[in-house]
Image 1 (cartoon, one colour):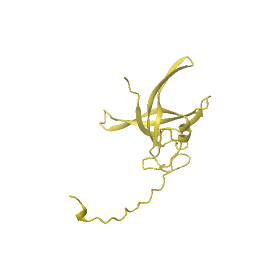
Image 2: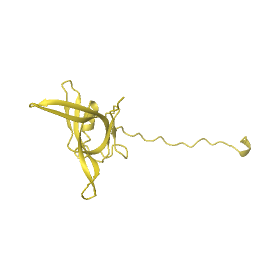
Image 3: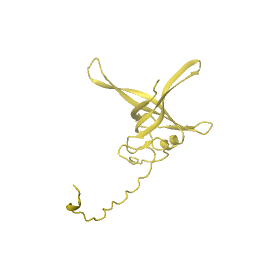
Length: 157
């Protein structure tokens, strides 16, 4: 048995690129920078070393998500790894990318709409088929229970 799941959080390295396949499927491509902390052997200080991860999202969610992301946006992503290889100009090329299943917006603002925090303190979440942020309904008014005459003598213990 093998498991192919990835969780990362970081900042977008570039504005997302939205395109469509010949069959009309929306494809959103973007890069996320994540840091790896290591101790510098010469100075003994901890340093951040960036890693740049290519991410791809498919379907109607890709178009909806593209409206809220821009370079520098902080996101948390869950997905799976996909390896691709091809040949270009006689040279063999390859890459490892994350196919995004879930994405959560972790920064306020950003995107073309500047929509704030998208409905909760940690940002909005686009997964499980959501196409847009869901507006929050006003909570129902709390009603007091009906008055009941209960005396200590009525309680059987």
